[in-house]
Amino acid sequence: MGLLGTISLFAEQFRLASAIVSGLYFDIAGIYHIIKKPVSKNEKIAMVPDIFIFLVMLIFILQLTLIQGS
Image (tube, rainbow, N blue to C red; front, side):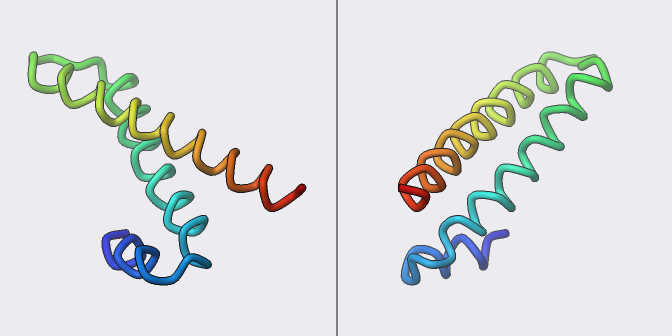
């Protein structure tokens, strides 16, 4: 994920792939936090950025695909 993100900084054609991979990673992490029922305060705090980053990646993917589809 990190290497793909770094490559996407220099090669635009890798941005969609990087957003999909990152979005899936944070989606799975966020769902895991929700299913597992956070026990500690740290787990609850970790859940919020996971879900937020997933939503940002989802919006980016939708924007990119709508622009390319037009």
